[in-house]
Length: 294
Ligand SMILES: [Fe+2]
Ligand SMILES: [Fe+2]
Image 1: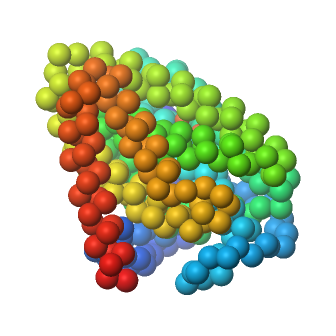
Image 2: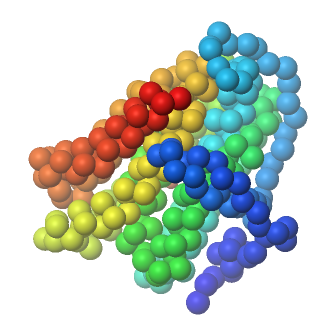
Image 3: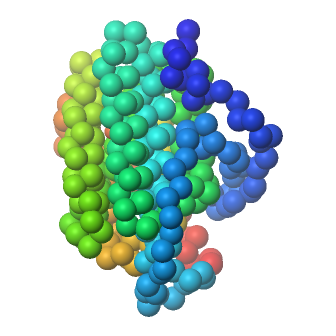
């Protein structure tokens, strides 16, 4: 039976669902559901003027645009994380109290980020976030519908939390010019580490002595998840660079975090490296081909 929070979050959007066919990171055309964030709530603060960055771009990439899109991903990504933990709580009664607490923490991160955006005249770009997060939400929904709790743990712990940690850390270092941002991202980062701690403990106990089974699960779940996050990293590279971050560094940090997670769950360094290479290298090759055919 699905609990109240998830029932609300899973309720059908009032507007009819349509779709566009934005090309996916891998080049195939993907059906992105519209209004996937409608039932997650929205926060729309005021916008101020923009400073131009000197980047060759298909669109005018300004610091303002970059912050609105990156913070859009952060705010709405946190809301998706809150929803995912609420859905996980519905699937596992034993840990439901803790998982609902995690959902509340993620919801607070979204609120803190929204408030920091408002204080800095940044309007989180919801439609951009909607396009980027649609594929992730589809995967979460599919695992939840299948009652696959372990897949949700892996997707949330290895992909979503890893991406948050690998982007929040460098952002905190360059965010001093935006009053209040450093504080809220640092607080959120500490809490993401608590979530990752639980994920690793759960998986270590669940798959103790069953490395092959665990790695098969990780590959099944993350081959989709990595592509989704990798595509987003590609799509935000210009925005990251515009505010003083490096997309390559964030991707590298994510690979490191991912490897460390595997090792903390109990996978040997050799197997962890082989797993990371098997997941990430095809993705990198795919992206390189796409770049060359632009
Ligand atoms: Fe969070
Ligand atoms: Fe988290």
